[in-house]
Length: 206
Image (cartoon, rainbow, N blue to C red; front, side):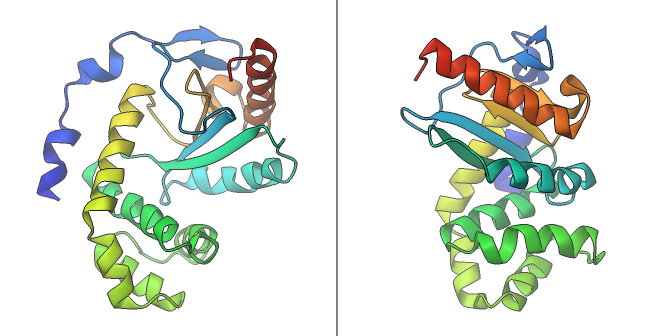
């Protein structure tokens, strides 16, 4: 974990320099951040597996995904506010690398929140992946790789740049931050997201 200490102790000035401007149901991210989805409108969910609010939000975002338009590219990014959040971030990127999100993402949420299992560190995550049919050696090779370390560091930096102070959060096209606090409810979060997608679509930003 020492390799992340410098990142996790970055000055709070990075988080609060250029404060976001308030708007109806969302805040404007200033400056806007680059996206990874080319010509498509990026919708990015930021989450933490141990967050009960993120667990409650998952059914809402999954229902939204069922009718997602083709010009929208949906991504997820683990939030990282403390060193203790790093193992879950590594778990997400490991599952993504192994093309095993269907075996890991929702089941890990369920295991922690519904089954009350204590899956918070490297060893318990290795056991969980093994329970889902992922070989321990394969898990360790990816989980401990430089590629995963780099992705975790990038997620931490982007969380700072988005000026996220809690999860779940949704970022629309690198420009707008939507949370339960700004939107008032999980249901309204996705209504606001749809409005912002329409705004981006109309503006021809992509």
